[in-house]
Image: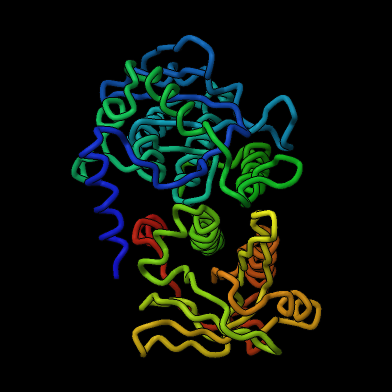
Length: 397
């Protein structure tokens, strides 16, 4: 099976009903940061609009002046929080950076806007970012229309399908309100309501760079290139796993084996799950989540969840059979709570922000060592995984 068939079904339904169909039950964006909409035309006209305010329009580099107040200082001051920039197309940020590069040295405050614009452009390469949004891309992640997929890359397509009667930055603000409406994907925010992921760390790095007055309009050093590729790849991992927390995306994942839905047929030291699916991307030896569903006497659904690993995967008989065991003794007791006949869902294990931070810190430490790639200890191991083509292209500049 293929997710292309699943996606086609949603597209045909949208064409039949005339309404955009949801890809997700949750929203992939959260209103955890103030919003600013930006537009820069080919002739140098700049429009900046903060949510709830009227647009501010200027021409040339001076038109970027409303963004001066958003540039962080050396520390992330509470009066200068991270703002989410929303644009109708990625080229807007490229044109804005070109204008910022023309700011004279005599205006250092306005020149620092270039660092912010460059940072926003970098964050666009990170799929799980909340710092920068290309609105049509965000819409494609949440809904599907009855149009050809290429037309969904255009802002006017989404204005029609979402019934938004606005233009320019006002349209961007209106669609962002629709995108942010709803419950965030599980795992996107922590218990304190703060955004998970690298955005906060990257924001603090920007503040330090601005504080040291680093030139933003130069090629990245080798160190920054390595860390940039790592954070982009980690971001793709995080977003792929966050999406699987959404029931609609889980249903889609069953078409290519990313998620496996079945029935528990044996429970002991190990548990066996049998599924009528024919595809399975879950591999032996890798951590996964076994989620069980069972109704009690009152009809309520009881959820059981245990982190385990697959020790046997058989998909050769026309159906998928998996044997899993708990990762450690503390998890073994949870596994024993499953009973034969429970509905079960198998997913890759969560990718946590803490894991990504440790990975980045390890690489940062190794990069500070001379010739670390030629040393026996700490030498990176070759690993392989699926990485979106746009992430690879962005890493190569």
